Image (cartoon, rainbow, N blue to C red; front, side, top):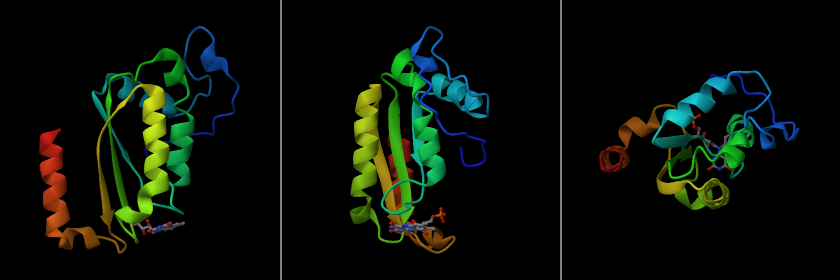
Length: 139
Ligand SMILES: Cc1cc2nc3c(=O)[nH]c(=O)nc-3n(C[C@H](O)[C@H](O)[C@H](O)COP(=O)(O)O)c2cc1C
């Protein structure tokens, strides 16, 4: 997602009528297809001001067609977030995802909320890596 061109949702409501796709032609079209084919979607974003990055917010805004077409219903979603402050600071972000999953009919399958500020710092944290590995296996 990070390297894809994603333009802002303009609330044109075109996705509510008929063909249930987004009329904005950018690389989000490729991501719609990938999400449609997936059983599970991992939303990974660093914590920026207690929420997701601007890029992740653009992505979430563009998920609007999935409300009409229901193509995410029953799929599982995972949240992965590194931050300076750690899990305790992720409340607002988790609430936003939780409400959005409910709205889309997705099932919350768990989260990885880790303290990791410096580049590659996470590599030194064996405990969190092990926990993430076991969580991944359980999925
Ligand atoms: C604009 C900006 C806002 C941030 N806001 C928060 C924040 O609210 N809480 C926090 O714990 N860390 C915050 N951070 C720190 C990042 O979450 C942290 O650097 C993260 O590990 C970066 O992950 P990355 O190495 O994958 O980019 C912020 C960083 C930036 C650049």
